[in-house]
Length: 224
Length: 252
Image (cartoon, rainbow over the protein chains, first blue to last red):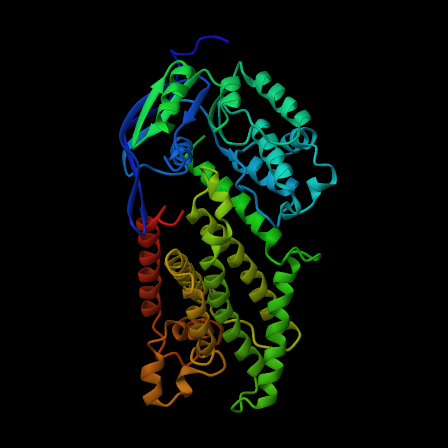
């Protein structure tokens, strides 16, 4: 894979983000400034450190309290188990909706997702009848059908049976010349397989490691 | 692509999506959204005509104009008030914002009611021999005000629901009796002065009677104040839009 340190993916400039909880404010980021190069990047941090919130900030779903984010690549929505699908609508109707909002060719996207997700007749059934594996396959297949330059993946890679996992990996390596991934996972093997760099979220700070192993060591120290 | 184009395609996609799920995926689909109010109005008109109508010979038309404009407000506002909750999974896509969901419901419910109103009034004119409308632009204007007031009320309720979901029950409790004090089946000019001075605080009275004063030639509309209605439109929309902006991301 070509070295893409020189190409920027996303910049965070003095970004702060907090959440109000009943017992006070939860600080996710306090004045984080970082420029991520266009590389496959793992996001590591303890439970509740704000990894998913960071993905939401990167994707643009949420705005920082203060500071700015700038995106230099087309970035997907955070692809995860938790639904981005309407439960009353069928798989195909959900796919059609997403194709429309991303201004894609609807029929093309439907064809791609249908053959990738292998849902059979369930593709035409309401999403609420899906097993969690089927839901993840639909989510993954749908995101793969749109030409993003960066895929945000929230714990969704290691899903489905072995065959589907192989298929996902193949789909992913096919995209590598034009796409990178930012991935949240607690599975080190999955992160090692897909990522070269790492980003630690700890106590409101972000620490970037060009080499994933450095980030994994830091993460182990946090958990020690 | 420009933000405006993205915005429009998101709202368009939401309108299509909402139309698909509106009626529990009934087989006849969105047609039901048209049939239901038309049936309801016919039944209500029939019932009220049985009860007695204060001697109006044209009660069917009178009642239809009232209930059509009342339902435009009530249905649209409560439909919009649920738009944030019922579309929550879709806010996982960066370009889909809660206000888009509210706007999509405004477009969908606004056009649905436009069709219903046209159908019912045409039926009154061509089948029941009702007189044709007198001032169509004035009718449009009052319906537009009612629709925009529904948007303001709906968004305000959706914002309050972020902290207090039970507000919807309160709203239902208010909108039940509102049917009886909004001049749906009587005219403000027939109300005794004492009660009239209280009733005119209700903005729906001005919307509904304003709509009638557009339909009927020489309607007794001395108490109708469209500017008062417009004030409600501005206040509710201001509260809704500012409230939405201030409470964004508070309840994720």
